[in-house]
Image 1: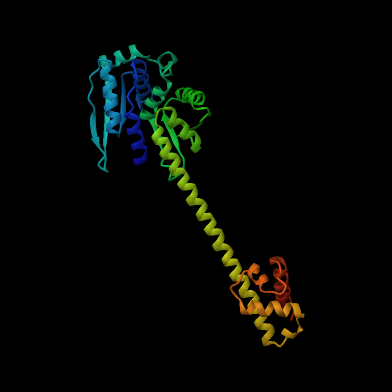
Image 2: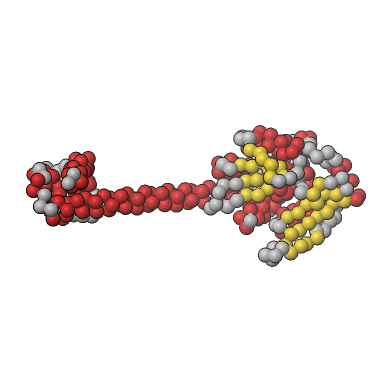
Length: 292
């Protein structure tokens, strides 16, 4: 939640360039508000910066509104703006009383509109965890319209799902998330997201490589124990001399170098043997011991 809140704070710090952008961003915040009924619209946010930009945008439309502030258990504040009565009539005269995206309002200011949508109903996960950008809303029709708009502006159709009573429009691909952040003007957040993604990938690759090497070491150690035990048994049973001269050389070298890899063991032979040749010799020794 902290990461998403920080990104929203950055988004709220972007000032609209003109009246069209101001209205488009405010439209996105209101249209995708969690509470959207016939008698009121309520915009809620945990970001103080988002609260400030909402209040400022409403004031630019001659609507002075103050939030109710609630404290969460973790100490963070929730700012709730309830738009009703004459203020609601004024807002619906500006935009529309219908719950759908009015293209005439956002034309030429789509980035500002989507920034408002993100501030209203968006959530982004830290790239240190799984990649996730969600937009959650009540209306299925509105979700479909948002998905189409994202496809046009970001370049890829997002996925859609239903979560309890909510509609969710989302991306799980890191590239698309970076594209969205860049599009709405959050270049710094996009760059930080990419850096975290790179660090995560490097860390994961290093862990995979380490796990692979540890697994190989374990296999080598296990095989070496089996081989040395077989050779020790042949020696104690007096059957070591029944091995061919070539196998006796390999058996002697394995006993002297129990921790060596097959490749390293091969280099100790004269002439040197390949890894495959050493493996075949050791297998023949173990098989010979098992024949008793």
